[in-house]
Length: 577
Image (tube, rainbow, N blue to C red):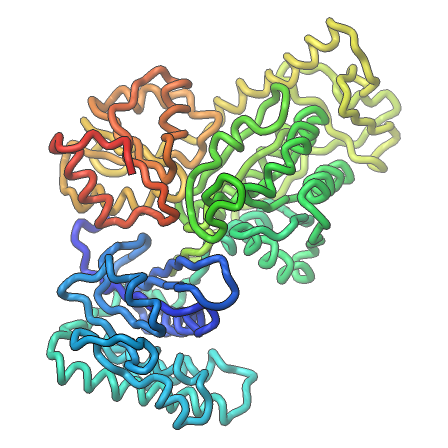
């Protein structure tokens, strides 16, 4: 991880429906194929039209995988963009906008007539390609390479549309040359990377979870659409024919989780994907899976609550919800990937663990991870194989047979001669309903025995930074790459990052990792420090400070770096937003 930020931060902001996403898609594609590292994330309002939505794109010759508060170039597409982003501007921010679109104007804003050029070319939509041309010109990307990507991007459109968009791109390049001449402040010729970035893939967290599910053998997904989890459903639906997946949009969340449980019973490998309020409706189904000892994989994409809260923003507020959901006591596993790459591997592992231990397994993400993306080498899946653990049954088959490790043989109806019974009431080994107190005790203990092996197989925290750390920055889930970059910027040889991608059950050596530090600083995107509380409860190790954020936005690297400097110099003991 580099300790110096040499990237360029570009933010495009406008109303929903103005084409911010088109500019983002085109620009990131052009940047990547020109062999630059690219990272993008977005924040948007919960409305179809209007509001202020923005996308940040970071470009560099080295990997960039986290957001910064700093804005080097801002492209403002409507009057609301200026007040929305003003708090992130500095004296060095280059602000580009169109006088007639912004309404109020100042000398600090560079006037680029996006819509006028687009109208001259015959369609207001061409303004997006003008904006792409301006930004490509300022980033010193070769014009003809960008024009070729325009052609690829609009493949399938009439030839005149492709040509017009290429003309719009070139007009944008001309505007960027004029900006350079007038301002003389763009020494931004990023050296191309030695890596073969053009051959890498660019994908977001939602796509990565979906790909990981496919790698885990997923062949059934059920969901009631709810932001920000819907991207996983739509991705798997688009891949349904290619990978023989049944994608079912259920009538509600209760149906969705029960469909998934039924699919596992019938021999499928099922995923249910949802978010906050939707998952609240699924909790009885989680408990049902616990009693049936049914495998179940649940993707829970967090967003700020309570209730509808901020439905299109981000927060790590549902750890307790996943941990304590469902009535009664039964084992579960919770993965919380810290990167797009980890989202793939956590999803793949979730299916393997659910199948092996016959338990609910959670993949806990959030809006920030779902909607962020960057270039990454193609995943190596050559060693992966899906090995279902069901058995052929005989006439004496016992679905809940008592075993030393608590894992009973799981049969599939029709695979063998035995009767495969399950029951949501307490039951004996043959799945017959019982209220016998001794059998009840045996069955509770049988289910809980799985926790011993689950903890033994838990993923340990990832340690980056100093190997002889005195201070540990502890994080979980999607904050990983943000915290790691902030740690590198601090350039301290006594500082390390401990990132947990498995938050329950915790690895058996977790307490030892924590006790190696004299000072523990837990960093979370929530208001109450849910993971810090879990750490203390599980290990007995006290947390020194907490740095929390809960305004609906992720941490920015530069923001977090400054907050850490204050805490580490004793100026602030954290524990507040």
